Length: 369
Image (cartoon, rainbow, N blue to C red; front, side):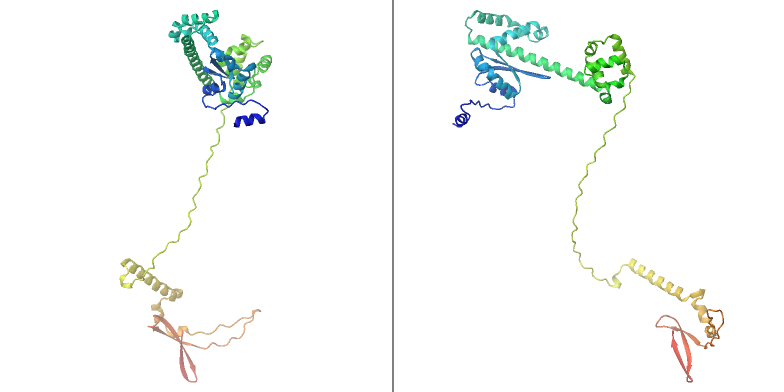
């Protein structure tokens, strides 16, 4: 009902629904429907994809369609060039192939033994006599055996040719395929002939000479002398090695670690008695260093404390020097007052202090410094 509704909208345009299949043989067989297919044999060569479809005698017209319409639609649908043959026609072509190909006949001895039987069936068809279903089945098996073996031979030959082509190309430097033919240094008329033949690079010419030398020798104007000139010109060429491609260093994403707050337990104070021995030693060294620094601070101008005790108080008495003005004239300085200094050791401070003694109103007062 859905198809009829679409056909009505398209003004009675007929619609065929084909189930798609990944296997090309199954796909082509369904594309030929409604005709029943006996066999599909594919030949996939460079630039040509041909499918030979074999159908029964009563299915031939249905498979081809009116004016070949069904075959053309199947070819567009599948992308293969379709050659539809009847069972007897395909059997005649298979007999000719087997009889004219000694290599194929050597590989199929059973098919060679069945040749007389197949010829008899085809003779009955040509005379218009009836052919039994068993004879049609025998024709189909004969065709299938020979055609499959033929396809295997072609595939093997194509594989060997591909390996030879890859090996020939590997012997030619990669930079030769980028070098223009004019840099080969051959004669001008030879260069013109090769250019007209479609040769553009030195590598292309070297590849053809390795795989198909007759293709170059068969060009008009190319003889033995021209071939010698071409070979000599190619022999002296040097090809620079291609620069290695820079290695792409992929950047590794760096994971960002978020800081995590870590709770630490409070440190309890440790009594002096509980400190380890090493810590007490370190504190002792710090105290000794502090005492030495204090001694150095009080021992000024190279005078130690012991020598300072031996000095008399009179050495600390002096006069204030006279001041000079900017013009260089000496001003009269006042006489400095004599100050008596008495040195004593202060047990509380742990150092030596000086005491100035002043006379005020007959009393003696002392100030500690």
